[in-house]
Image 1 (tube, rainbow, N blue to C red):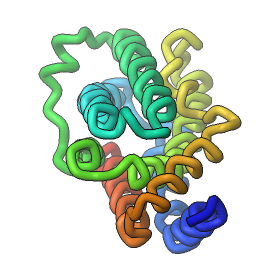
Image 2: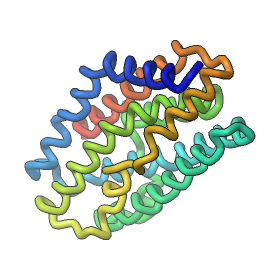
Image 3: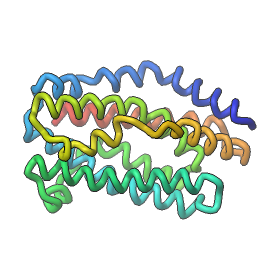
Length: 221
């Protein structure tokens, strides 16, 4: 397999999931925050779910590193782990601005649909390849980042949060310039080692589906 094969697979995934991606980007929950219709109390649900998700994702990525750390994708996975660690700290800052302490966050009961994303990430950490993981988050982060950018702007203008309260949203609103190519390199290496392209497509499709379920859960709150 060559890098062009990794690119072709990602392009295929993006085309096949275009309608799903649009649903995430146009989700009514984000629009409701932008118009100030979501109460500050309901925003606690966002913080509570993200605390649960990121805490789980830290362990999931660490497990991927323990399974694939000797392969060329090590630095890529370590970068993802560092990003998750920064997001964890930033989530605590957002929660604090909402009047939540860590004990309240830890006691928050996530909705099943709101936790499904994290549970699939845990499956990838235990059973998946770095190739599947890289494809899934590469496809997923665009819509997630777009929504985080919109939420960050709305929380400043409609709710009066300060910049230091919203570093969580700023972290995800953009990705490093090399993120796409770095992801493609990991995918390419996995394909060359025999990872089935169908598994790569499946991982991205499932993660994006669970992403939509997360936003549906936020709307349910």
